[in-house]
Length: 608
Image (cartoon, rainbow, N blue to C red; front, side, top):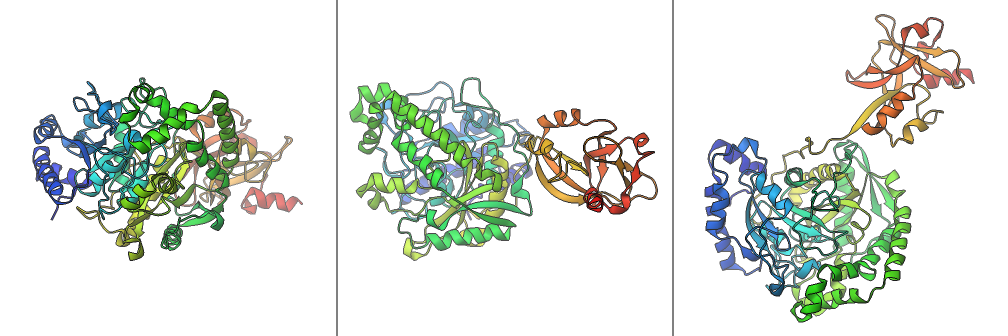
């Protein structure tokens, strides 16, 4: 039985002493040699030698596995990301250089205990979604070597799927962290842009690039993200994002967008419609309500990526090199990139204006849904087919991915099944998408969806998926939200509710207080207001609503509450407690006791 490389499984063995990092790298080295002797998939550009891996393992001697979240966890690195002392090629030998320091994200992972095992193959300069545009050979699919692995992070995905690493780093500009995940039956995390710093990463489109993570499970991807995230002073595009808010991924009910029938495109894949419908049914079984979304503006954004000035940004990323040695580029990469030299400044501004218009058109979508769900890719192709029609088929694979970074969205690709023999039994999956900062809710929902589909999805080539681990909601993912119970004019539809909604609050649930409160109609004021007072005897359960708003907005809400009202701790009927509106006792002496109505709405109806 092959070694289970999921992070929880390795941690258990390190903690009980049945495995050491030194032993692990020996086992991995043997596994790599055996894999290379079977099918040549062109996974690596530079695999670390056994001695180099031993050196990284030895650096953990004397460390306590309990204190390092990634202690002894092996990972692969896309070869456009720097690892100190190992050449970075971006899949172009003439471009190669040897960095003295590792990329910031790699440094953070090694500091957390992770062990690098090699630099992986990619579509040259991260331009492509197929994995065949490399002078180091077309990277072959881990399940069926006749098929593309997906790109540009081709080798990164295949290395994890073959059991050569626990997780891997890719990059994602147009879908390169998601398409290879689907094609190799993995979870693919495309974090919010800037959440993982790009210092030490060869850019494709610097304003859009993000480092991505391939993992066996969403929980593993979350563990990696927690260890590596955060602003970097050396990367102007890195950022510390605001807290994620309500974790809809853990909720018993949520709303997810799906494309209208007219917007679904499978590019001739006979299995696509049924596979997508099955994934939607799984989400409904988890408590989700599907909501049809018009993808027209999203598709318009996607078209800008390769028809607009972002091609010029690809040119700018390697401008000195391509102008000096154009013949060194892969023919397809060169044909795409050289188009950027002819895009003018007016063209660029026109595209930026258009993008801003489309952002405004897509923004209201998120008011009605928690996340958007689409196929990760419409279909999959053989290597032979892609080499015969490289531009069009590559474009097809980006149909559902190209808009995400331009709109500053986060995404997680999730395996949900396998297609029929009509599509050679290849993997299928969907992608969950939400606004920037929503990485944790997406990973949580991805974990639940993945666990539900595991009888269909099965295992990777090396071990069963370990799906019991929950996504960590740790200090790395604070919610940054405060819940407030309201009982009067702040209720939905009443005059002061706008004080909540204008601060970005959302209704969480309708509740009743514990039966130890009295409700009073307070005299005076332009707007009728209740006062809720806790009592020792004669109390009632009062109807309330619990709202959630960003913590940064809580202070201004409290500051605007006039005496004798204030915020205190309110006991609810389910024995939980929450911050809520309460009243000073002296103000109720001459007020009308309306507790018998059971709530403010009932009292107001009695007045009409």
